[in-house]
Image 1: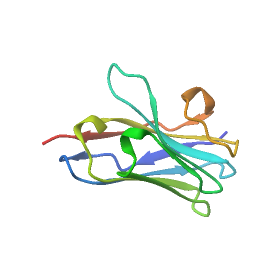
Image 2 (image 1 turned 90 degrees about the vertical axis):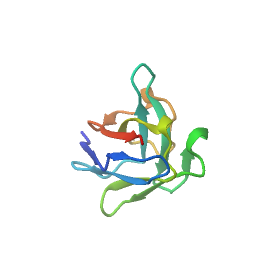
Image 3 (image 1 turned 120 degrees about the vertical axis):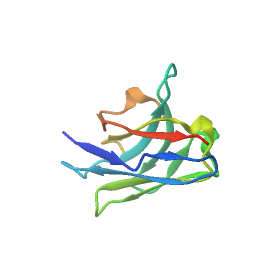
Amino acid sequence: DVQLVESGGDLVQPGGSLRLSCAAVTYNGVGCMGWFRQAPGKEREAVATISVDDSAYYAESVKGRFTVSRDNAKKTTYLQMNNLKSEDTAMYYCTARYEIVCSSTKSGYKFWGQGTQVTVSS
C-alpha cells in the first residue's frame, strides 16, 4: 500500500500563504495525487488534484489562489495556497490513486494521509 505523509499546515492571517507537502513514503507509482479538505460539520471536498501527466483540477472556490504540483522523482505533491481566506480553514488531506485519470470524489481514492490543519484567522 501507499503511505502518504503531509505537512505544512499552520495558523495564518487572511491574505497569507502556505505550502503543503505530501510525500508518498512507500510507493511512487500512483497516477493521481491530490488534496481534499474537511471543516467541522462539512463533507470532505476536493480542493485540487494532479495527474502524472500534470493535468490539474481545482475546486471553483480556490481557482486562481491555489496551485497543485508534483515532483515524481521525490514522490511528492505540493499545494501552494495564496491569498488565504477564513473559509479555507480546514483539515487538509493528501490522497492518491493508481489511475491516471483523477477523481473529484473521495470515494475514488484508495490512499489517504493523516491530515494537516490549516487555520486562517486574524
